[in-house]
Amino acid sequence: MKDISIGLVGAGTVGGGVVKVLSKRLDFFRNELGLPLRLARIADKQISLFKELPVGDAVCTASADDILNDDSIQIVIELVGGKGFAFDLIMEALKRKKHVITANKALIAERGPEIFECAEKNGVSVYFEASVGGGMPVIKAIREGLIGNNVFSVKTIINGTCNYILTKMTVEGLPFADVLKEAQARGYAEADPTLDIEGGDSGHKAAILASLISDGYVPFEKVYREGITSISAEDIRFASELGYTIKLLGVIKKNNSDDQLDVRVHPAMLHDDHILASVSNVYNAVLLEGDSVGQILLYGRGAGELPTASAVVSDIIDVARNISASSPVRVPMGYYSKSKEISIKQIDTITSRYYLRFTVVDQPGVLASITSELGKHGISIASVMQKEGYEDSSVPVIILTHLASEKGIKDSVAGIEKMSFIKDKTQIIRIES
Image (cartoon, rainbow, N blue to C red; front, side, top):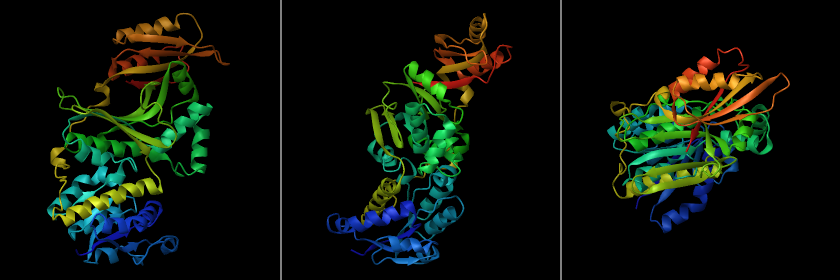
């Protein structure tokens, strides 16, 4: 059989990992699987990277055009990141009828409809396993392994940076700013960590997963996102005393009686016996629930050189098998289009249980005033905890609610914060079961 030639654009951390994995596995793929794969060309502007990699007989170049212009190359792997050059590269590769593999979550989440429409028009495919969950095969699980299910719930810890920070804050009682600096020093957080700590990275991944389980398109910009910068060491300590762990959670819920999808990313309190509560440090997890299979948990490293390379290589094998079987679009993605945009619930329309931390003046009648205002908005209280005072004569009052509406919570808190005894902004954290 004629060689199936691959062109790789981007020889950085993940691209270098792909080269390393392929160098070890190509003989197996060729001899045992009957897939004559060949890494034909590698492109990166930083040509010094090639010296550190087992490139074999691949032609190394500084220009991605050398890959696009090579008619023998059937698979183009985009691993440069970003939304400018990477998008142009992918679209040009598809127009030249080359299959594309990418780890670019931002592009799939924000410009997926354009990309998949172009792929369908040209009779080629786009694979993107590495865009969500690193080495965890969550995309394949949803698109193929769980195809017989209505997947109606996804709860996921999908950002290793935030999970590392929250874990360190929990274990060592350190403040957010100190742990963030340590995470940056250890390479777990970027110099500019905004995309991670403000929920953008998790939002991209949640949008992709939500699109896959809904057979439509969930626009990233409509996904509610709330980061972890407001989570304090005392919130984590209070949560622990109450039997809960705080995680940055991606939540996707589908209700057959409602045509709107609930998709959001925010800090959440999980009971300590929840299966996701024990996911710590840089590890990720995706908890899927289908109507036939029940719950399935995928757990592993969500980033890094070799875990992400593992996902890219799995896509290479899928595409190669499709080519070998003359079935280039075996897993269609035509539904991922703007014409099939999914309606998303507004955050104010959801219901949840809530953790509320009020910082108040230590004086009689405060608790009665708070509970009275909550009652006006139909908020039922599950438990109350009042701690000893601070040096400035303020005290934290912690309330856990029963199931309540987001709007009711926000309206009641707005009313309470107008009261003279409130000393600071109220902390609101949703509780997930």
